Length: 277
Ligand SMILES: Nc1ncnc2c1ncn2[C@@H]1O[C@H](COP(=O)(O)OP(=O)(O)O)[C@@H](O)[C@H]1O
Ligand SMILES: [Mg+2]
Image (cartoon, rainbow, N blue to C red; front, side):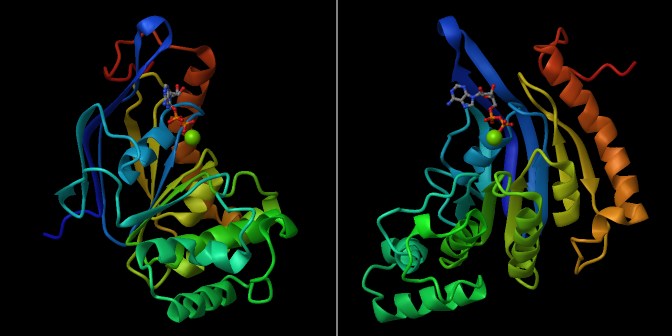
């Protein structure tokens, strides 16, 4: 059997909290993401979505458990992955082209002309071929996202980790970006782990939606395969009956966690099974 692209095996994340008390953000989460899958994680704000993603990226070593990337225990930064965050990290003093090729130059210094060619190819793929000489401040929010996408894809990662990448965009720009991500991903064998608090976005994009419980000590409380056919028309998909069925089913789980997060820390034992009324 081929190993999963990303495996979290009973991972736990503890942080030093106020007054010297430890805070357990994520508690014993196990999940396996198959190569080539597009998987989303949803959950209430502060439940530990970014924490899980950061562990998969190798930016945060787990306090317990193991992260495996294609079967190998991860130590240090995950070199087979790139990360895209809500705030794109473009260097304001570099041109769009230089921003796009930055990661490539760091990974393959001396590639020279080929790097610039590849940069221009990627600018074209994300519809910014005429903007290579501009600076980030001269671009709209959607265009800056496209630069960030090109930056992420140009290095040829096997895994793309995305943490609410589109949540700062207006709804129309956001839908366009979602479509562009799907068209970049489809036909590749790349694995995407996508964090969002937006359930509609998660269903529209993914093969599977994972629901994380409210913190502290978050756990996975639901896994929902999304059987909507591909390619997907993101403009119309939200009005399809199957979409509504999936939304209703997942929201039942998620709603409970969102309400719990409003109510504050639970009285249930951390990590214990959920008590259904
Ligand atoms: N570096 C850190 N130090 C202390 N607490 C942290 C740190 N990172 C995250 N946390 C806490 O862990 C919990 C989960 O955070 P996070 O993963 O960012 O949530 P989400 O992305 O789901 O909104 C939150 O309560 C947050 O305050
Ligand atoms: Mg987050």
